[in-house]
Length: 306
Image (cartoon, rainbow, N blue to C red; front, side, top):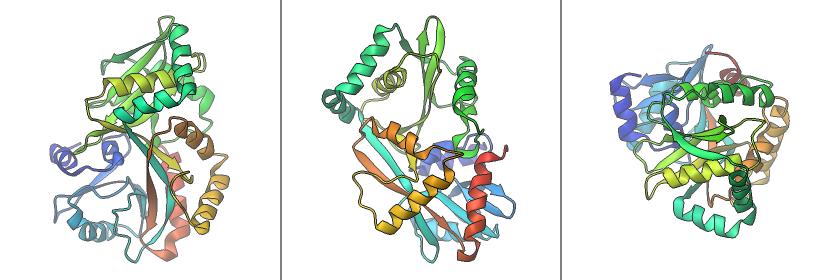
């Protein structure tokens, strides 16, 4: 990534997805008329973005229009409620959970199940350590992928970020002298919170490894930091009210995607940690008449290798 792009991301990045612009297979468009950039993946004549534009909020309307001129159609994927939808068609995509270290301490006091899982992993002899960027975690990733990923996914879910950690931090769970799990935390630029972008558990790992990794990562992050588990895709938050139409749309999407992506299972896993802050995440289409093609663009962006 160019130094100028990194500077803009560091200056203006606000959303968790801002940390993903350096991931493999993600392109970056630099706005010639402002201090903004947009992360995206081109699919034919369309583009699927990585969340909101990154730049001053007041410049977003112009940035969005100039970016859309580059393509026949644009799917704004994973946008926040700050995104100016305007004439575009928007729909719910899910929600994001967030917490602070103080929240986590309170959660552990109230959730005996989480405490039990952490103790169980520790008693089995699992040790969690923060690892250096050059430590090889790919063997653990390969073992996990062979059990959990019938489809190889790319774009915003590409697990190969473990080989491109740069400013990220990672914690590994070691069991019988082997890495049986790890968690990668990505800093959200211009914010005090981190995205738990990836957590991997080897099928041979004892239960409670992920809970132990999350606990260790939170303890190792800077004081006052916030953290997020990222998007709960096509799911309804238990604490955010949604209309019947939104619930229906999300339900249909979950059913259609079930053969490829288990949205419900992922959401249940994230909600287990009881992070108290939930924020709606949406997607928007630049043009109504291209909406069916935009859905195809999103699917292709995730399943076609860059």
